[in-house]
Image (cartoon, rainbow, N blue to C red):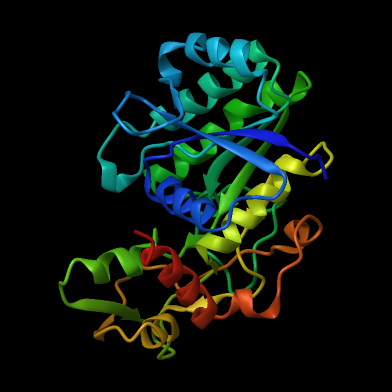
Amino acid sequence: MRANSTGILVGASGRVGTLLRAVWALAPPDALSVTCQWRQARDGRDGLVWSPLEGPGALKAWAGRHGPPDTIMMLAGVTPSTQGALDTNARLAVACLEAARATGCGRVLIASSSVVYGPGHGAPIPEDAPYAPVSPYGVAKRDMERACRPFRDAGLDVCCLRIGNVLGADALMLNAATGQPLVIDRFRDGSGPIRSFLGPLTLGRILERLCTCPGPLPEALNVGAPHPVAMETLAEAAGLDWQWRDAPETALHDVTLDCTRLAGFYTFSDAESRPEEMLAQLARIDDLP
């Protein structure tokens, strides 16, 4: 592990970035000093003001004062819910990779998604599975990953993190927070969707490990807890008021990740795969002032 490693969190104001800021406020990383990136300055908010799509100038100036960061964690992006142009994901990734090269940063973690795999087939999906996205968002994330390859081929340590569902930034909990009736798709076998989840504290620990471990990292890593979770099990554990609906033909039943490769970098506890532990992690950071 590299002691006193430095990292830039790009996308600190997004859903996952907000969770991570709360995680690291609760439990600061032992070996990683994190600087948050913001697109605009705001009173009372520390960090780096930098818009990656405007070029690397602000990051270069920051690096001139503090030294080049060891890792850029690129979590910014456009999702279907933000209603932006989905090709922005690839442009953001390339902008951060170019900025890393310009500042001497040796490692970049790019937040991708399990949607690049498309529908599951009843078994955990490994990283060497072919791309098979079925949505425009999945296609955009695939294209983003492909845009990273020339930088990796040129020697930059680039790893695309195919993240499953981060509790607190996932569709189930976000829908529950709206106060609207919560429905869960029921498939012909009587079960609901099965997905790879992880708690926000677990994600923070994983990122600390990936930022500080010796390199190089693999081209892609699945990021999720070792054991998947059924949506109805999670809803029951959270005490949510929910009901079934018949799954539409387009609904995906089982999309889970094979996280064997990740286990070579991070050792999961048995509890970290349990909905109760994931919910407890979320409750801990929700209670922060």
